[in-house]
Image 1: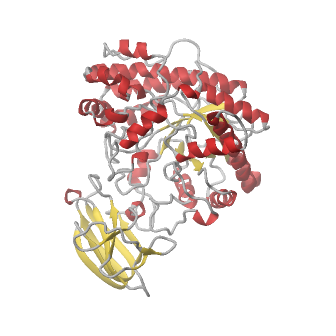
Image 2: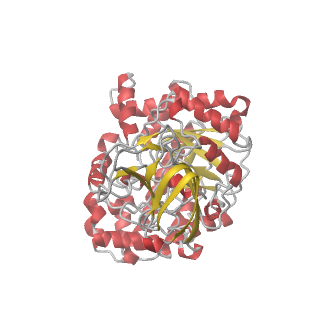
Image 3: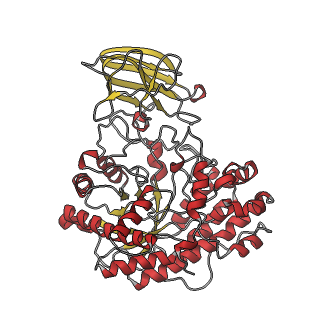
Length: 565
């Protein structure tokens, strides 16, 4: 069933969700995905009925499978070297992240906070250079950055801390102050029971300021980049999507000079450099999926593409997507697309105009990558992001694509399931559920996601493009006032590690394949459950597979399902 976007209530619900987010702590945009609400689900009645029983439906769908359109139907691509049919989104680089991909954990540190004695944040500006290193301090001022802050299960042990420059650094609450006169070295014995690690520069010499701070994981080789525990978690996945690593949502980067570079103090502010993303692909043998910010100039697109070309293995595919979820009103890119499309006179309907502008800019970005890669453009997979729950919008984009004689290799959707369970309309029903009833309702919600997929495949097949999933999985998160409902949050948190979740995921993945979907990229790797969502396949890097039913289901599907596309 298709519907017009004027019927969609998602933006209003999202506004409620964002208004409920705290002023401090994790950025809600890192966790509130908000694919959930959309129009009233067509399978709501079935979901309500299913909630009366805890019986999981058969893992394999009935009837003949829908044929998939090949990603390479319009262009020859370098072969996929990794055998897995599934990909994975990587979590945002944040000081509070439990993913911890880097050996040097300072690369995920927070931006500097101006502080003085007795005041945590005095709001004064801090002088920094272009790479984010503190160059001088005001009278009585200190500069503090947070590393693995909050209730983060980071490894206990001795961290090798290294820096250059003259000055004094304090490591409260783990250790006291250490001074240096050129080359600083300190073995920091850190224990998560004491809290995180605060790196506070209390004095620095403007002629030789403290800089190039590194904090190396216990027992790690400081000449390597990647945390071995992180590499082990992502090893089973063939495609790694780095949308959050590139700070795509609400992106403010514009000029080529804005491109993140390797020697930035932290990669948690402007994003992870292209060279580092390429290194991850080269290290793991996986393909990568990159997202181009909606305000990136052509010069920035070219600079990023050039850095990738010059550092990535020519045998790796690069999935290229313009922005992320331009239909989602919670992001600035959605508003920007509607404004630009309307200004260009593409449609009298602002939403449709935004979809058309998104299509045009996607084609332009793909062409720039093609030009940069030249004969190596067989590495480039041209992706057009679409809205899973709204087949009408996909049709608008593909028709406009044909009208401008553009090409893409795949449309990408996010067929999440269970989002309706977190809406205010369903709150009363969910409050009356126990854990078995919630798991049954979640299982019933899979049918709706698969129905969306079938509709998208039918539309895409007419235009000879593949359907892939840029994100997907369960969507248990409260919207608006439901976000703070203690009973609902307890149910949702427990569902994250409930044994039935594995069966629900397996039925979902089998249904995706059967409906004609090809590459499926789960959201996300590692993240703890909480009121902002239960997105992580694992809650922490060292979580045993047997205790992580979503991760176990993904691996079970990979182990038993040869890549079919």
